[in-house]
Image (tube, rainbow, N blue to C red):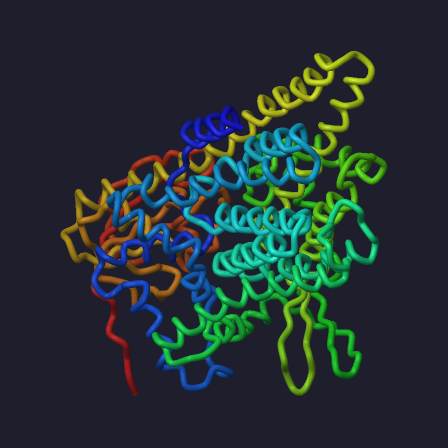
Length: 569
């Protein structure tokens, strides 16, 4: 495990990404991490904005409102920025630590479930997945949620295997706290994992598993005690969160109110067809039945590291992990070794999680006296918790292969066969990791180029307009310089300006040219593509080729005139 620890640190250093906007939460996390440096943007002060909400049913929430509530993923970033200063390394420290931590915890979990060989195999598989390597150095919830989920499950396994009731309750309560921290990093995976954790002890009791629930009292009593302690640990975190937010906003269950208010975005997901069951209405996604399978198709394609993938949903973020996980998953039910049922229950939970989040992810809302369940087409990163399951099932398969090789050729062959497979697997993953890393690195390079352009032409306090989502990254790279930022997508030609506009390049958005194109308003997109002149009155100051010149138009900096006065009747 010490070698794996060093291996993981080297991977994170070599393939360090830094802050590159690809999703909304990075925007929020970077802004809030500078709470001590930008006046009026304290994290805790931001919570007080919810005191003015008079009617939660009518409040038009925004998905960005959810991100400040991911405290266990966010707040450590704030602490590291204050400790280490404003830099890409400081803002990424927490993700890097939890990335390494998740590898070590999954290794320990694999060892608890199937022995040393399974633990070592699971740790290496997880450490080398390209998505895990690259997101271990990004300001997002992915690595913290993996770490908390793996920790909660590992502590639950310790509780189930404990020999005394006291140890069962202590480990179970600690597991509940782990799931509570997971809830404070990302809500949906937390409740899926918590629900599974509460059911697992009763399932093992029903199957009369001989390797778990081995304390002196009856199995059903032990199961009830463990589940109760897990729930109690979770509720402690839940209660502390609600008291804190009530003190700041005057609202109880503030996190849940924000989630409910974001149901306003349901129109973006919900199609016109619904199955009416009286009390319950089941709505298909806006793309119809096809969308129930489309994301799984993209997920399957993303296992193949082919460089012509240009979109984030098809990028090879999962590398070659399926080459180990799929065969292992097929043979796992037929393997015979210690704690076989507990292993199946844990890995089976991740299989069910994948099926649910790919095909059955339903968003519940209460409307017109009906419980409305809407199928939601998810973003690609909801699959990240399944990395734990991929690593565990691959570790189990490799351990079984090693035992088979040992019986045929002795202990030396038994260690060499899985070892060679893991080395080949890690080397094969270098290509997709390097491909993904290069795209992100070039995107960040465009942000640096634009910062240099702005410094050459803008005085502090100047308004800078660009693609939606660019603001936090310029703040990070230009601090202590200060500019005012606006998004072109929020404006019309008559209301934008005065100031400067940045158009072109990848502009820190990330992997997908389609995403950045959508973040410019329709009236500006022809100029972004180079098929039209700039809007009337805009004066071109400088043009430079971007680092993604093969994919994106050149970067252009323009000076904007005063907006036209609005005519009133």
